[in-house]
Image (cartoon, rainbow, N blue to C red; front, side, top):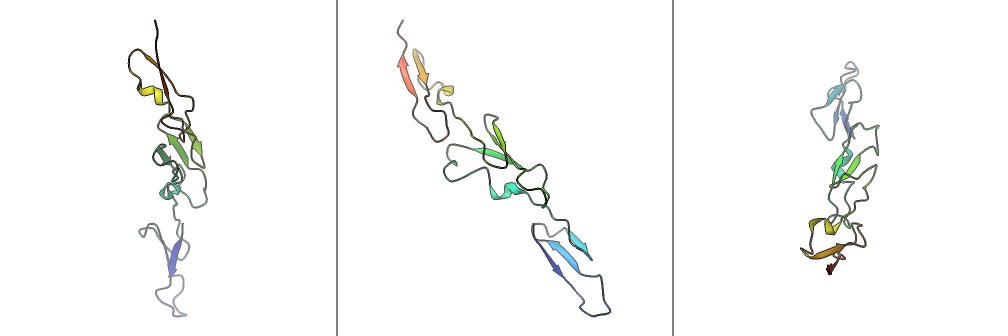
Length: 126
């Protein structure tokens, strides 16, 4: 995370009074040195991409929000599958909601998030 430093008194008799303020949280200020700024990697929505938004809702959690701790964010799918440092591979079983109804068997040949509406319903013959 970035920060902005400024010296309120530029006189040679005034030393060690410069202040550094974090860009992402202006309440974090350090006098006479760099501020300790935090970086929440989830703010940039790393668990979502344009192709995945509609079918693949993921929750992001950054356990260590330090500027020195990068790519430790965790993406978690609604079904509990997770990945660290990038989007998780979520699977969607379209048959889980029983779309075929009573007397039919549902089969979802491809449960990847990019494959939807491909489930098959077959009548149960007794």
